[in-house]
Length: 115
Image (cartoon, rainbow, N blue to C red; front, side):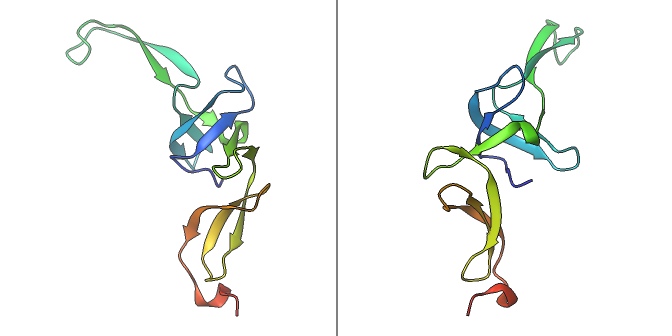
């Protein structure tokens, strides 16, 4: 699960297929992500002090991470992400199509540095 919050992704399955948007939040335990303006549902709420009007609220629901593809910022295409060690020994995410780095996963470690 290399997709993080803030990444730009494209939905590849479901009713919102083909939609490109930004990830708001990722839940690693369930393997789901909350994507901006995707998978919207109506939540019916009763009148209360918090919602004095009541009625239907439109909100986003989580999507499976397997239904999302990362959009690379350098090549602009949708792609899978891989993990590798950089020359300094830091673990990083990278685009499988163009090989560009997509951010660091963990800090540098002496044992993984290239000599």
